[in-house]
Length: 283
Image (cartoon, rainbow, N blue to C red; front, side, top):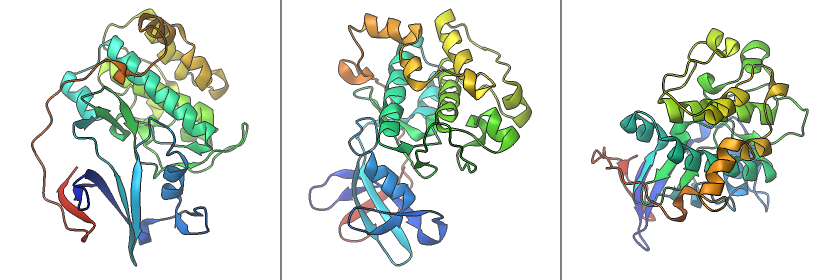
């Protein structure tokens, strides 16, 4: 991934280069143009507020180049958590609610991300809004009850049913990954590393959190997928409802707040992509 500048207006953008040889699944845009499935999925959810915006794309003989928005002051959630050790519950609630709402909207549009994790969430430090990025592990959403038998996401975020049986359903997979994410936010690290630990799902809370927050995490990380809550049930969990009431209604973290954290000055040099975009650093 690179950062660049659009020549016609000086807009700072993010640039992703995808080698054609690395694309394993293809789809079609409206009009019949064949593109990588990732690009099709991303274009499908462009009306979802919490998804990174695709500004343009270019097709080359050997690759595709995606041009996406790049807010000026951003940091991925992994780095944000690392710098802060863990998040206060009030901030974790605002972030987590945004992610759940974004995921629900993606599912409503027929897209499952399948790699929800802190590294795939960008925090806008000036507004507190989160953006979901990288749909490279995504897929078309299957009907309730239908199983997936492939998984290209991050294994430590994968649910027990994938580790044990190499299959899973869309919503229970997503809910499990959200439970891992919430634990990561409030405790500062993911709960499981090894496959055996994932399958046992024995949680060790390394930081003191409220009983409601712990209850939601435990609910999302139930071993049996049928025991996990639905995405809509998560939004109606007391931990999130209490936050919504305190905020005067359900809203995103960016409604009236900012997140002020220093950005790294380290910007390794990138490479030129031609006259339409000037690439000047990796991100």
